[in-house]
Image (cartoon, rainbow, N blue to C red):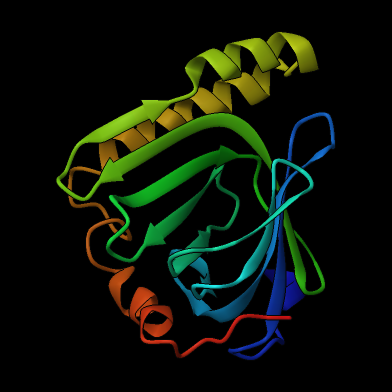
Length: 182
């Protein structure tokens, strides 16, 4: 996270997810919680405004933390109860930081772990369709598929940060310690 290295905990970060053709997918403000060996942790409290599907405005219903790993082809959202999905991973391009904004390109594939332990790989049909429509290069396809397979394995085998490492970060937003950004 070179561009945010000087930022302090609590700083506002704008999270931007784009589709491969450059159109907006999701965006919302988050609070910088900190960094560790897994990457940069951002917090989102319930009631945070967001744009989804490009332009539709909504409010986040439950708190979560977003992990932005360094130089990896995924992001991970760790959700507070009662959300039935405990961890939701988007397969993305590696993040780019531009000051207080982090941007990733969503590559359609997703992997989630339900609270009861089921792990599901999602949206392979959307990935296949967009691969043709947007002309994903072979390297992007290979990286996306490898990330999806890796995530499906590690979400269930005790690998950190997916076992317990995320819990202290999630507690910071579940307890209301990080306020939503305007």
